[in-house]
Length: 314
Image (cartoon, rainbow, N blue to C red; front, side, top):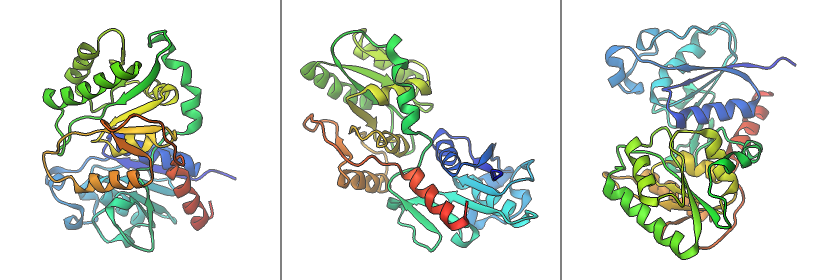
């Protein structure tokens, strides 16, 4: 049977790409990425006040597709427009709350903490993503040439980056690094620090300066290093700003500690997400007693894909 063809629409941010690509792979469709760019002042207008028109966004040169998977505010109007103007039956799936009438989409995939309800809504525990257990396992040995060869167990610090809610100031980073330093001294583990695309370069350099030569700081964004760290770490620490990376870490079934940053503004949505993960016994807060615990590995991407496959007979 010929695979369905899909187009993935995002603003180009890693977290969004991870979600649309993860779902496309789980659905087993052939796909191409398109970075959405809005025209002129439409960049400032929310989707519910924008017309469903080609005038809103720069033309997407693709006309042969069966599935549209979109994520983020800027991709809402292009997804609806491309579905409406297609010359055949097209399914469109939007990830996150589109903030428009949900009936514009065949499926909405949104985390439980967004509290969206509708017949076409599939609620998830956390964010779906593009990581797989096989991929993590296949890259287990990648960090062998980076880490210090000794008997210490390994912990990973997975870092996100500044957002409108959380500031990566030296003060905030020092608070996290100090808490980790006390633990690594007490429990004699080796820390591996993994930056993401959002991590400021000065934060990476500060980590290298702070932890010194006895620990491993990956200086560049390196997916293989990220996967390897998830595979070899006994415990995983993730900064509180990234729901995506917390969700990705939950695929491992390993103990996850959240490194908190005092929010600049109301972060209730993030708090709801973390409260859910705590109820599921997935996370604890950095600073709580160090222990190993277990939970059911979270693989929401494949669960969502199976629901969609059944409904559209893929």
